[in-house]
Image (cartoon, rainbow over the protein chains, first blue to last red):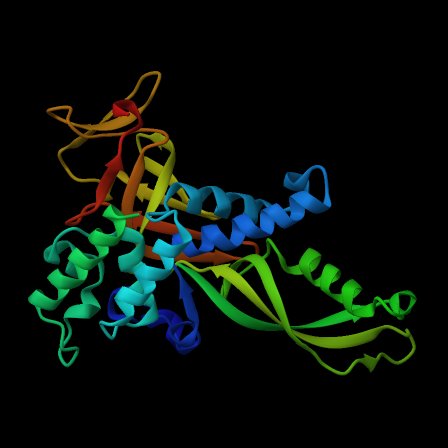
Length: 138
Length: 176
């Protein structure tokens, strides 16, 4: 596959399939996995035995690195970021890492600065302050 | 990064399961077969979240087994080169350190740790800046950038760096 060689998330080269796919932020994954884990818990005594190691590790990871815990806040983050014409992947990186400054945001997601995106520093600044507002009122 | 994608798989089912609960058996078998696996293309399959469709079954000649094409939604974890993410340090040695982001193992070589951080051996091996203000040890949380991935049959392994702006320790277990 030729795409394999050129893969670079910084330029948003993650392959057609993943570019179109729905990305999930850590906090969203946490909600889904926790729900699934609860379901398993109701069905059997020892749910940890039922799940794969991949599931267990992922659950621990997303619990540790979720910026937002409250389901409403998680929904809000996605809604706020949607207003800025971001790609799914960019949206989730920003939602996961919650950069504090414009510089940091550009370092985390270099592709937001590319031409034709209509995102100048002011807009990025506004986006970040919207995000931190959600966090504060969570 | 975690993705929610639709995948397809041909499921072979033994004739003894044909009956009212055929679909349930298919789904249970699918979960057992697929969850926890890893492929280079789609990454780690963390959990199946739904079944899109179960196609028409095809009887295999001679065996009686039936193959069903099943489309299912699942959560996958797929690391990408150039991606920046957070990870937990699992082991530190003089070559560098290992970290884990969900199911993925990562290694950061000492060449890709900032030059002002020195390796300190001892009970808790760590990398520390000369003024001692920043320390990387087991259980530290770091933000790193993936610069390479290696895929083998059952695992994806990543090489990362913390030698760039806004990368490095985000949370030191010793200071909490």
